[in-house]
Length: 439
Ligand code: ASP
Image 1 (cartoon, rainbow, N blue to C red):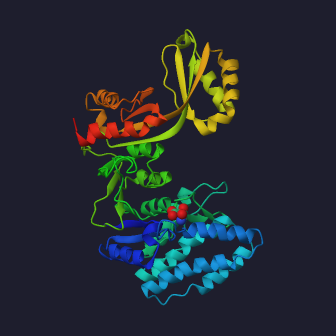
Image 2 (cartoon, helix red, strand yellow):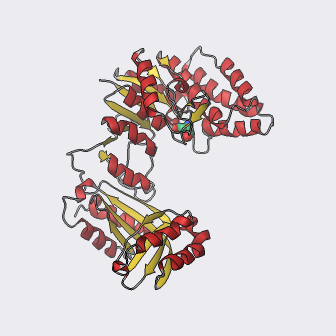
Image 3 (tube, rainbow, N blue to C red):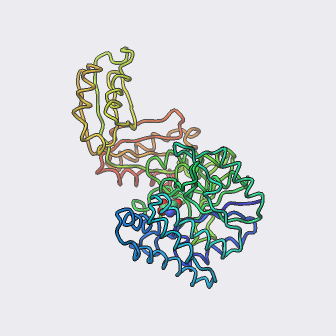
């Protein structure tokens, strides 16, 4: 049995947090491969080291003096080293970083140093082997992860050591220059390492005890999710429920390795398991609710639309020509509605409308703004009668007017459109009916 353990920035923001992480790793000898993020926020208005590095490199790029900014970053690490009582010195590393910043080594290099240095500290603290991610995580010429080469290099390197630290967030291009993933990308590194090391579990340690059924800013103390499938997670993340980087799923999913989201500040909590599929039913029929405000609907009407072959394509072409992606397209006999992000659509609205008229000759087009979309997700919905009925009666009781319903063919997901102003009330009503009263 072996595990990869990835720790997020808030889990490694200070010496105190490092100690908690050390305890967690020592408590279980199967936790052999560690992927650290850069130090995150220690308190609410603190700055993440990654952001400090970006800002510092900005100065360097403009040929401004960046010595103070770099000294502040060095101080963050020194505080951790001192707090842990380590002998380690990062002086040489910082001289090299300073030199490379002066030589304009690039934004990616700059940002990657957050994880790189934290990895050095972590390896020293734990007595594990340090593996520079630039030597084992490889990108292709066009900046995509070279999954095969990475897997080959990384598994060979890991075979050489019993326990290792691989810093998150970065790798290197074919010419050796450093490249990072998008923000939050240490989650992806954790998944890549889990795949290469063929571990049994990928533990992803953060500052919450897994996923919650609904957003705690809307629902007081929502219940946690014990088990969620990759598919359900994808639906919920798309609607804004973030904890894990979206691209972190793919490498482990290919190998059937489950992800366990855990809380560094409450290690006794079981957290959430993310799995390929499961026979475990979720307790409440629904697995989760998530949603976003700020959508517009474009309602297009045309008599006999349904028998006109190619009508939908022509309508969507008008959106495509203006570089707008659509979210949902529910349709009726003579109507078709296209949901788009309001902020993207607003500036191009008249061009799109003109495009639809030109391409599809509809009878009328109406635009409604300030709508919210809510996804009610659950693998249990398929085998339970009346789920949609319960949702809509709950919404009716809460005086929420439903503007759109879209049930995906996977039957794992019902999307509801409501006015922005009804968003919170709608989520509360759905949560109440399934989780609180469980009617
Ligand atoms: N440190 C990087 C960030 O702040 C990557 C990560 O934490 O996953 O986005």
